[in-house]
Image (cartoon, rainbow, N blue to C red; front, side, top):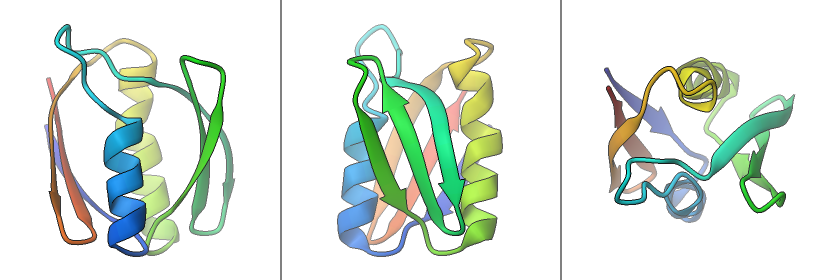
Length: 93
């Protein structure tokens, strides 16, 4: 399954790419969604840190939250990410 998420700008897209980094064993560092406020999403990582990501709008936040939840629940694995300006393409299996 593939999804395209539009971030607020290229910096936010780069930040999101680095936070969902896929290791060789196809794991992601995202462990949960802590909060959603309009177009802002706060996610927690395996190292217990929290990071804020600004997406283009609330629709993109909802779309990303729905997509990443099955990865957080370990039902799916991320297999690739690609950044095109402020858009992140994420593929999971």
